[in-house]
Amino acid sequence: MSNKIFVKDLEIEAIIGIFDWEREVKQLIKISYEVEVDIKKAFKSDNIEDTFDYKTTSKKIIKFVEKSSFQLIEALAEKVSKIIMQDERVLNLSLSVSKPGALRGSKEVGLTIFRSR
Image 1 (cartoon, one colour):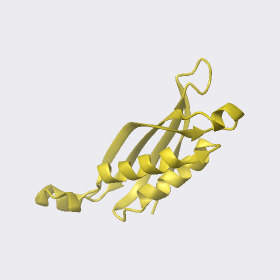
Image 2 (cartoon, helix red, strand yellow; image 1 turned 30 degrees about the vertical axis):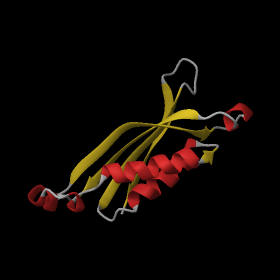
Image 3 (cartoon, helix red, strand yellow; image 1 turned 45 degrees about the vertical axis):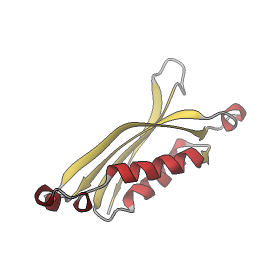
Image 4 (cartoon, helix red, strand yellow; image 1 turned 90 degrees about the vertical axis):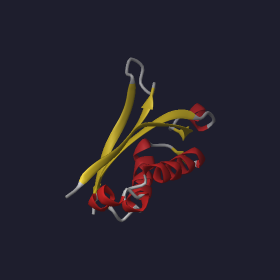
């Protein structure tokens, strides 16, 4: 039995982009992710050790992204996916990274990547 746990619109500021001004000013990045995990043990134990700890994982993501300096959200997404996949319980991952206001007339621009074990 597998289940999905998600985090939606984690907002983090970081240096991201290809233009000179983007290399100097932190911009808002939104990260959402959904992990497929086997957490049947947690249903019975009610213990955080038996499930995917989204708070700890999200803190790792925030710490990494805030200190990062990428040109492309594609490269950032790949590194963030590796942080999430460090948890052996994660079977599948859907990760979205977006930049609000990156394109005039659009609410946000981004990508979604998928990873599996």
